[in-house]
Amino acid sequence: MVSLLPLLALYVAVPVLGQRGSKPVGDEAPLLRASDRLLHGHYALPGTMDSVSYLWHGPGAPLLLTPFVALHAPLAAARLLGPCLLFASALVFYRLLRTRLAPGGALAGTYAFGLHLPFYEGLPSLHKEPLAVLLVTAGLLWTSRLLAGGARRHVVLAGLAFGSLAMVRLEYGWLLVAMLAASALWWVLAADRAPARRTMCVCAVALAACAPWLIYTYEVTGRPLYWGNSGGSSLYWMSPTGVRGETGQWHAFHTVLATPALSRYRPLFNGLQRVTPIERDRALRRIALANIRARPGGYLRNLAANFSRLWFLEEFRPRPPGVLVVAYGVANSLLLGAVAWAAVVLVRRRGWLPREALPFAALAAGTVLLHLIPSAEPRMVLPAVPALLWLVAYAARCAVADRGVSRRPVEAGRGAGAMADTRR
Image (tube, rainbow, N blue to C red):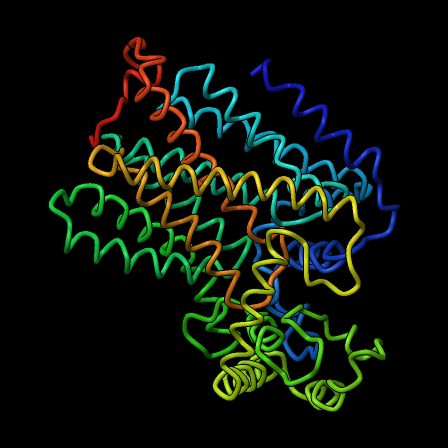
């Protein structure tokens, strides 16, 4: 869409102007190595003592990078994937908003989405979040069409989108399980069971799409429903360890061994070097749960600190650059404030909400909760933004309609009028 092309120019300018050099940084090296392993017909490294080379990352992002690895493309070319994926997300988000809003409102909402500043931090290097955001947005679009009376293909498309999301960020596999259970409960309790049944079908297809991965991890680990081996590390750092000044921030294995301030953790982590990634993951989970049981108040304090990290870039050591803290603080304060306002508006109209409102709200809340309980980084909650901004945009439309500012009908099939405030 021509009206959204300025966003593409902006997204491409970020990695071009903020290049991180020709060498991989952050997660780039393990993702590229995983892509290379996929090209050679395998994924996990049996016998490795390196957790990150095992089942730390899902196969979704490495699979997308395989053409670049196969062609030996420069890293700068691969880094342009992020801007392209984020722009595709904006295009899909516009289509999503058009199912309920007129063109002007949908365009304004899409620019609010496209200019959300936290999206920009990860664009100069390879991250999983742009792909995750695209898959969430596509899943929301097809779920919206399904719940509005769509065809069976929308069940499959939405399910494949959310299943692919779990292959990009493995923790979403557990969210899919929770959403399936929640939609089943919704089906039992609801007077109108159609949206609950369709939501349940989407979750079932999504989990079915994950079956090859779960079969593979079972063959490799011997453990059923084993999504990945990073969860123990995240939960351990979130647990209250009794070390003064620690508020649940995650630290990489090599950081513990190299940073003097973390020297109190070295006996534990030196011991963990001698066990396999699966045993290490299990050990860290066990220690984390023991820490939480022993110091529940400390865990609650870490939860509060984790919320500040996720949304406002606080509680980090060392402290991020001031301009980044301000950008996160302003953008996410506006977002959370708008979500709180939208919640008030939509609760007042709860008897007339569209069918997708409840699943969208549940997905957004589940995403935030999923990353609040273990230690997490701010970019990990970005997939919640499309659902949150959809709720805000729809609440704004309701508020305008309630005030009588804009009640004119729209042609059938062209958006807001075609799918007005109804629970079809």
